[in-house]
Image (cartoon, rainbow, N blue to C red; front, side):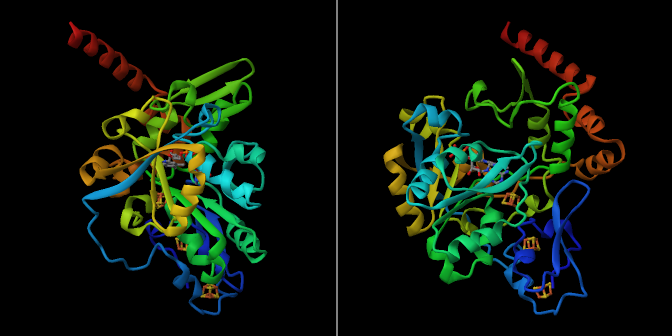
Amino acid sequence: MIRITDRSSCCGCTACASVCPHGAISMKEDRMGFAYPQLDESLCTECGLCVRTCDFIQERAKDPVPDRVKVIAARHVDDEKLAGSQSGGVFTALSDVILAEGGVVYGASLTDDYSVSHIRVDNIHSRECLKGSKYVQSNLTGIFASVRNDLQKGIPVMFTGTPCQVAGLRSFIVPHLQENLFTVDFICHGVPSPAVWNDYVTWMSGRAKPSGVSFRDGDMGWRVHWESFSYAGRKEFRETWRLLFYKNIMLRRSCFRCPYNINERKADVTMADFWGVEEIVPELADGKGVSMVICFTEKGSKLFSRASSYLRTAKAVVSKEFLLRKNPNLVRPSVPDKDLECFETAYQEKGFVHVAQRWADLGWRYKAWKIKKYIANIFRKK
Ligand SMILES: Cc1cc2nc3c(=O)[nH]c(=O)nc-3n(C[C@H](O)[C@H](O)[C@H](O)COP(=O)(O)OP(=O)(O)OC[C@H]3O[C@@H](n4cnc5c(N)ncnc54)[C@H](O)[C@@H]3O)c2cc1C
Ligand code: SF4
Ligand code: SF4
Ligand code: SF4
């Protein structure tokens, strides 16, 4: 039976809780808002199904990452559709194919209070809220059972999520139901804490509730990563979340031992920002966003080729050295910040504002550092 003693050994995919035939496992949040399975021993029959279903803890052959990887650079032909997407709009193109064939799409959406949950959509209009990266772990409650229900009815399903969510789902769905299941993941840096995110949103709602939130606002350009909060008549661009995200100080513990490098992908298609595209496919690098796509299965290749009429594409080969330089999480997990433990304790005891002052941009320390950097730049130019 599943018992979590080390938080880094569970990615929170919900497969064990979804598969238990006796409802003995429920998902409970820790102090960072990350969900972990909790066992009710009085209901457990010790059948072992949950442990067999957990993909994250399976033993893996540690094959070396290949020196060269075949990829596709892709960009949506329609600039309007591209605008709402995070990189090249590949998700939009793939989901258009599934929806046009009467299928349904699962992905991460912002809720009314700006937390992040997976939802099911069956039309292009409601699909729009799935576009854009939400840099926080999404809530999967009830989603795996809903996917199985659709597949049992013969409805084609496209599920998008982190590599570990896709691996968990594929482990949960029995093989004979997977024919109509299309899975799409992305190169994943890691998922930040839902609790810290909720506190940030509450803090930003102090004077007025935002009418919109973006984790990486496209108005700043594809390459720039700033979050934005919209209020009546104005938009505030900020970097608090970005700074905490890239500091690797509030990611889920499992992300630092993530097994889902290129050899371990369970998705049919992987998508990513094509950082460094100007070195590899300069003709697509117009600054508006380009995706890198890797098809891992025949089913993924066929889906991608059906979506190709919506996309400008170019085949390319990239080296492991290029990936390590531009998008390392396809090769290895993120490295934890040395203050990881300290951050969690400080957050627990003193709250969001304290940690954002100490490790992000709310305090005088960051402002002083920015001024110093600005002055140093002036002298460097002279
Ligand atoms: C937490 C996180 C970390 C990422 N790390 C990297 C990285 O290191 N390198 C890289 O190149 N790209 C990374 N990405 C992916 C990248 O930001 C784009 O999502 C990807 O390039 C697809 O772009 P698009 O324009 O085709 O998709 P879009 O149209 O922007 O669609 C976004 C898709 O991502 C899904 N999604 C959004 N947020 C979440 C979430 N929290 N959990 C699960 N699914 C979600 C949506 O359901 C949708 O399918 C990350 C994304 C997330 C959410
Ligand atoms: S061992 Fe079986 S009964 Fe017990 S929690 Fe796991 S799946 Fe449920
Ligand atoms: S990784 Fe998924 S299946 Fe494994 S224990 Fe955690 S929630 Fe359960
Ligand atoms: S880094 Fe790995 S463990 Fe963390 S969310 Fe991404 S796929 Fe899951």
